[in-house]
Amino acid sequence: MKKVVMTSTVATGLALATPMVAEAALGDQTLRFGMNHSDVIELQDVLSNKGFFTYEKSTGYFGTITIDAVKDFQRANNLTADGIVGPKTFAALGKAQSSNGQASNNNNSNNTTTTAPTQVASSGILRNGSRGSAVTTLQQQLASLGYYKIKVDGIYGNGTRQAVLNFQRDHNLLVDGIAGPQTLQALANKAGGQAPPQNSNSGSSSKPKEETATPAPPSNIANGIYRVGSSGNAVTELQAQLRSVGVFNQNPTGYFGKDTEASVRAFQRSHNLTVDGIAGPQTLAKLREVATNQGGQQQTGSGNSGNSGGSSTTSPAAFVTNLIAEASLHIGVPYLWGGTTTSGFDCSGYIQYVFKQQGVNLTRTVATQWNAGTAVSQPSVGDVVFFETYTSGPSHNGIYIGNNQFIHSGSSTGVTITSMDNPYWKARYLGAKRLH
Image (cartoon, rainbow, N blue to C red):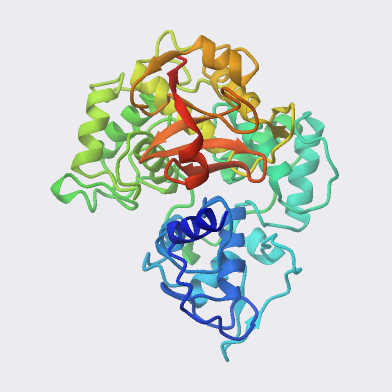
């Protein structure tokens, strides 16, 4: 047990020799690589709630996994991606700093990060951690359509996010769990009433809020590298190809915004590429290789597998991309013995659910899924990896996502991403099967 703990510690770069400094509230001090502090635990908890920190537990050490999570969060929020958590990053996390550097934090002591109602109203974007009357309206509209079935409390938590995900999936919207202008308007149209207020001051921001914004003149497209802010025909082609593999679920606009960046990240993650949201030569080459829409022309149909599944018109590579994108949507869903829904999964229930969204019906248990699969010597992205845990034979499984990592529903973690090199799992690995 001691050896397992120590090795797991090394996996996150836990510097045991670094002394813990005095207790302080998150936001009191700038956090950066190499720190070992209770504030880092709270930072990791907040990033985990938002889906950026995916290690199996918060460690308190600001190592490579934490810096990558911070950079991903900063890129997603249009901040300088330097991996340093200062005032602007704290503000985006919902942890505001006052002018003297002391935290101005009205959050409860739990790990739920909140955003002030004024921020919600001005941005017109609701996401995990948002709260206020706009969230109450959102929950009421979702409830009226049968998507939200728990208490209306004005707090955007995992239950609200899952309801938004299901609504987006059913209405051919970008499935990201974030209620932006497109989702809010579609919800208002279906439920009746008005969408929560959005910012009408066009001069307050220099960047479009959504992918449907009017494309800017061509920019930042030099050297075949496309990133947030790029626009033009090349971006239209990029979006069409991303749509053909199922990660961009709206009509191409020619503007590379946050939705396109998220789609590029999903594609990169499922094809073992550097996940930076920038479409450079490697990403573009892989996309040209696997896209079902090689010419970049818009296909007919929704381009979204939705709940109906079915992969008859999808290439094997596109199937795998969609599978991993679906699996990633449920990170953070709690573990539930016997669970087969987004309210809670056990390991095989999670596998069964994710594959079903792509039109593949699997058996229910780990053992029968093991028996149904085709053995492979080394797992590829989309294969299912099996482990022997509490009983002889296969008793736990997950989906291999590349980089020697798998995504699974662990009994102590819920749906999370874990390294195959983790001593616990490495010692119990049985093999991989292909189930598609």
